[in-house]
Image 1 (spheres, helix red, strand yellow):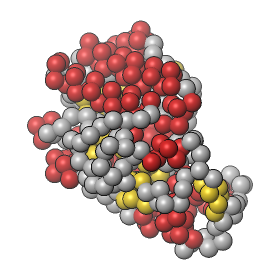
Image 2 (cartoon, one colour):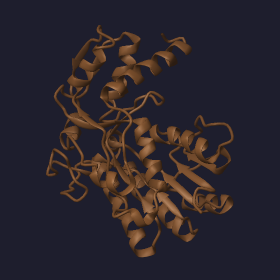
Image 3 (spheres, rainbow, N blue to C red):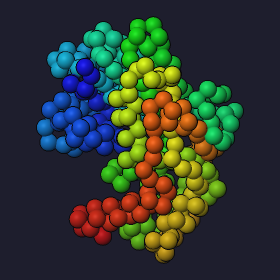
Image 4 (cartoon, rainbow, N blue to C red):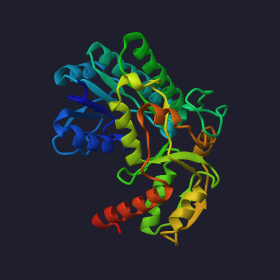
Length: 320
């Protein structure tokens, strides 16, 4: 039975922290072993172990010491940072994933969950309503390595019957984790500026359409896939999921319905080229059919929720 002893790598990342909160509520904090290269804030009762996923010996030790049966492998170098340091991205995203899969197989782990990304797609991919099976020629080290991780997961499933599962996330929006330098992070950063009454300079062109999703739906989908009987799944690593598509101009217009004084300017940087290589919308039909993927948040609901929670956080911290 899976989910008795759960390992989460990349616990300090955007998805990791919120996933651990949900896992803790659902299965109990005492079942979770959170790992990252540096300490991070965790729910009470969750064990933390420092881990670099390039350290295969340490991974094996954790697997054995805790009797791990389920892995959520989230440790990764993302798109923008991957272009700044492609060697590190390749090592962490490819060798790190190989280490997790190999150790999971050798230690009889029952289930491994690995998120993928719209970053696996490239300019040759259709721009709209992209299916699972399509042209995949990524142009970034992030996309190349995440597609490699998809292939590795499929390999371990087909060759060794290791139950590896994954889905392709669109851009993710969250109020709990501060924005970094990711290609879609303008859609988070602008809320911090808007709520604080500061002007925002967008690093993408105003008409750059990309698929997005609010974090509660992203976490819910990942958990739903993890709990679905294997017999219902026609795919392994590459389920497409998406909530809505917008460009910066559309998002800023919706935000202005609640914060009319938001001031916007545009100064596209190297991330524009990355965004231009990605599709604008994904076809989630297979996820809906196989494991019941569904959404709770549309764009307007997302904007209202982001503003309300960020205002509360900034007020409590004395920053507003």
